[in-house]
Length: 229
Image 1 (cartoon, rainbow, N blue to C red):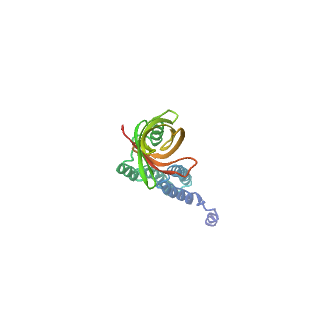
Image 2: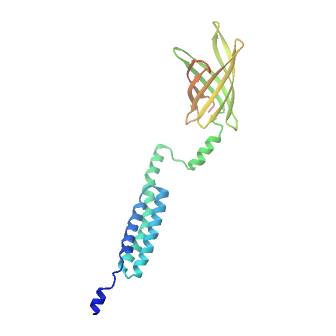
Image 3: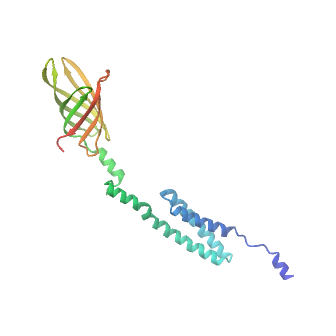
């Protein structure tokens, strides 16, 4: 009777044991995945669940499994911490080799760069026509706090079979590395405007892009080189 009664007792549920092992394995998996925020959240979540289920196993006399899972949760923390040099070490080395490593945070560096007056100073310019000689000029530009730009330039042009010096006023704006400038001058009592749109080089010493005359099809390319670096 005792043996039969013992045989009829319900078996202890295996679900906590299985779930504890599965959660522990998932915690290990997410600990080594290179997805910073998601990996952290899921690693911590699965590790906590595995630890709680390990305590449940201990209370149900599954001592070996419970202790093993607890040790496994501790190993998860070690695995997660040790994975950081592996994940970010290669990126650090690549950045240092290419010269893109900065001691300042990226956001701070970009914000500082965008608030600097990057194009203040004297520039030597040259614009190009299709199948015609290029024209050289000099311009002094000033950048204001609101990123607006003003300036004055001089260039020698050939008018009526003689060379004349043309002075022009410049206005424009800068949005990070994008430069837009309008050159306004007067020839034969007629005011004209030429628009320059280009990009500031990473070393801040060159601007290159395209010029056009609004309302016409005349256009070409230009370059500006800073002369007072």
